[in-house]
Length: 248
Image 1 (spheres, rainbow, N blue to C red):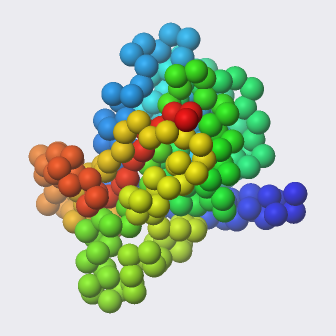
Image 2: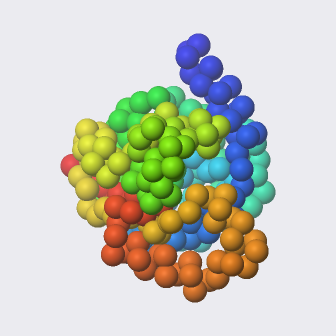
């Protein structure tokens, strides 16, 4: 219990330091484009669980796709921001994933840029697996350690290797850097079968550089779409990795 209390305090402290990047918000839309083919065609009777909500940028995109959306997070400020953006039908829970108990079963469970923060991602994935309804899908996205922006940072001597932490990783409380094979290994270790996997958005620049380009008008909507399409061709060089999985 003491360890869980310490983790809650850590998450609340990190939440106050999070940068709300414009690029990061836009990435949520691109993630949903990759997930959308694996979601139910109609929302009637469908329930979804979002594990980790940041400021609700992804929550507002997925809520209309389900009859009921439940959200669980341990950071008070994240829940406050998210609650203000969702409809009264949404159900929000303040809890750690390690101690959260889900009553209903879900047709979709989303973990978007969450696993890299966890003490034991396989444990959390294993618990979430039991909350899936028959035919339900788990939809996971994590930052990609092979992203060109990170590889460039290695060549510049800013970090010693692809699995090393950048200043942003440390500031935002990351515990690990995922590569395509390590993400797949954690998914399978949790008793899940991979239905689809790949990358989301070819990203040549760091988040803060993308933000500055967007703010200055140097990065256009057409350029962003080009990066998304290039990511379909080169999944291992994307900003994020994604996996769609179901109970094995």
